Length: 212
Image (cartoon, rainbow, N blue to C red; front, side, top):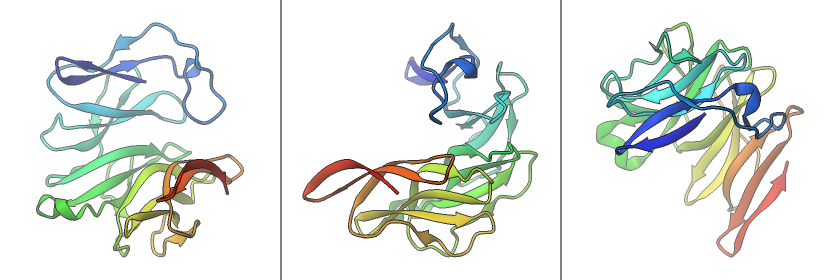
């Protein structure tokens, strides 16, 4: 999908998911005709195709505050998935079976200065979210990657002006630390075999590509 700024707002565009780069290494950067599938004053952003290509998850404030929504690939049947009223949410990521969406859940707005995002998952069919990093006193960010079996999720953890790659299970609990040292970490990508690629740098070294 492509986001195009229109009159200061974001308008969502749609392409055939078989013809665009979905970031999993097995798609092609061949573009077809684009068409707007959302409009109006709502701020729609971060669109993500479902694994079967039939649905799009996105973040929107169309019901007031930011929440996770889904809609058919043609823009029909929009449904609100999360029901947050005072927390900001972002970065939806589908589970491999298309039954869950992971996302970052912000703290109460009065605590925004602390920037302690939590990782949460929510059933696409609706229901209460499950916060997976509730016990972690550090912010999480970056690309959310589900393991191919849908049992674990990988993300980035901020820790005293450094970052590391973390992993936890869909049951939550302990966050496993996958990288060590005082690095900045970005562009973490999980391969089908479970190996990671990422950009890592330090205060004295520009980011370089690493594999794990």
